[in-house]
Amino acid sequence: MARRERVVRMSVEQPLWRALTAYRVLTLVYAVLLAFFGRGDYERLPVAVAFLTVMGLWTLLTLPRVAGAAACTRWFLGADLTVALAGILLTPLADADARLEDGSTLPSIWTAGAVLAFALKGGWRWAAFASTLVAAANIVERGEPSRDTFHNVLLVWVASIAIGYVVEVARASERTLARALEIEAATRERERLARDIHDSVLQVLAMVQRRGTALGGEAAELGRMAGEQEVALRTLVTSGLVPTSRVSEDSADGAVVRSVDVATDDGAEPAELDLRALLAPYAGSRVSLAEPGAPVLLAPGAARELAAAVGAALDNVAVHAGPGAQAWILVEDEPDEVIVTVRDDGPGIREGRLDQAEGEGRLGVALSIRGRLRDLGGTAELISVPGQGTEVELKVPKIPKAPRGKAGSAR
Image 1 (cartoon, helix red, strand yellow):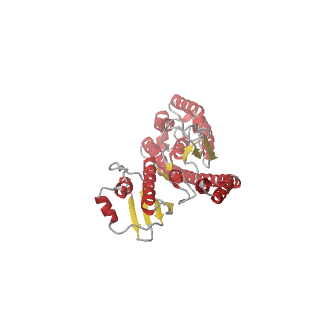
Image 2 (cartoon, one colour):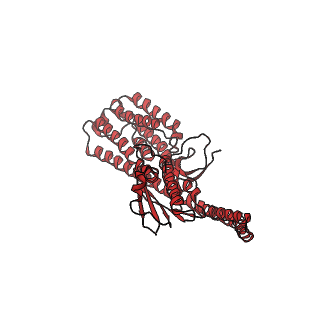
Image 3 (cartoon, one colour):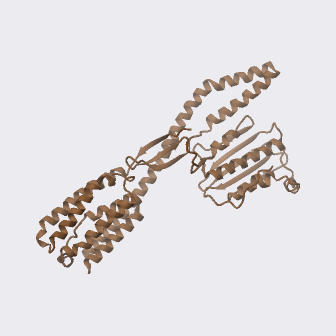
């Protein structure tokens, strides 16, 4: 199957990258002018000229690297910070009096641009790392740092960490908004499809069911099947299934986006599966499925095992509650776990029947249900009152755990 991707482009941080690009150019010009007007103070002017030339070429050639998060790679950040640190440490070699007079370093305030790039790319932790190295280089360059040196170092350190934190908050807000827009778009499309299907397919199936029942005989069986398909199709349309999605960075402008994965043709295992899509086939005329409007994402293995446990519970309903029993599946997406409840209106299970079945070698509940959930680090609770049906509550944590063994599939 082909793969297509639809993204919602949103980037609060992109203007910050543009501002950083302008900042690097302006501070380069400032550092060059500062060195030009103070050229008489340099004891080794060629050292200053050589470094400023390298810094200028580096700044102009790497402007595309600070155009967005995608282009700003780790190796570039490391090289850029190395240029800044080298300029600071070379300052006493070009101007020995700068240390005594607490003068400006060769790169001057251009150094802050390298630290800000760390903040925009990796957040406040990366900013703290880069600004700490710059602070150490400034202290080493000064030898005996003054109060002004500590003031400037602390200013860069606090400002870069603050900007890094703001960027992290902005990215989290973008993800939340993209998620909301995705659900809204999926809801509108689902409503449109529901209207179209209701006006065509569902009405035809309902008519076949009515006519078949009225005619009797083989037509009645055909009508019954049409009725089941009508219920299954109606459940699928109203279930709110939307494709699973992931958060990525757009390679063009570095924006945080929400990408919708429709299908893959390379056979690669997705990072997460929507549990609702695995449970939808169980819905029918005698099985009702209630689920959240948003995707219920789990690791592929956990999602499949949980769906298999639900299937085992429904098999038990068909076998023990009778072919005419009704069943209900309720899916709850909690912050730390997913809860699926399977309930039926059968006669229930008399006390001690499960232990007796396990002793006789019939391990449907023990292995197909409880065993699967145990291997996932979850739990399976069965509540049954004679004459009032049976309820099976399945809980699976969202944090994947290593399986302790493979659950059987015997019923």
